[in-house]
Length: 147
Length: 72
Image (cartoon, rainbow over all chains, first blue to last red; front, side):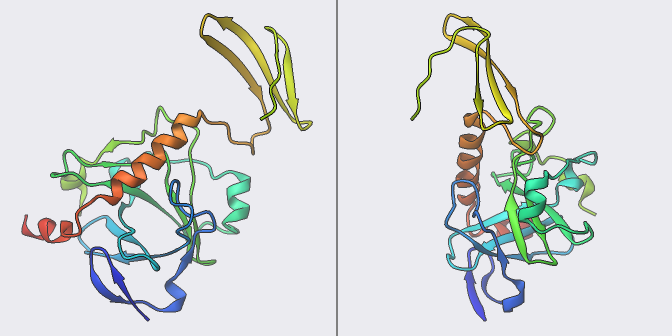
């Protein structure tokens, strides 16, 4: 099927690519169907695009590129909701707040998006430790670590 | 909303596993102790509001951002 996307124009996706976010995203509780679209193999970025609403598209980043020691536990509740049995196919993305330059842009380490690729479901979780993992973590390391 | 009055060192129970205790009252500020199972997440509500605001802010990224990126 074809969907209109915010950043990439019309994109062909298959039914199996659609991820269900049972609870939507924080502040966007009604957005439940998303796809993750790659943008450029050289960049640690992707697009999280709503299947239903073109204008709902986020730039997301692979947080471990920007903060090497980023790590957290997924609570039992979240594990259950995300039907996580093994971790191999569980991916973590951080929502990017893009500014004019990368130096000013930030990623949200406090509320990562967890996706279970096996079960095709995802959730934005909130970490307890908001000192180590801020809502606005500077993206400035991108240029050095993009490759 | 259920409204309860409590004095310092008094507590309330929510269910049988969550205890909320008033530890100190100092003018406008109240210190609250929370005993809850690890599976229960406790956050200041500002944290949720801030994340919601951040999500909305992130949505304002211009749809031409990728073209800008490629120009660099």
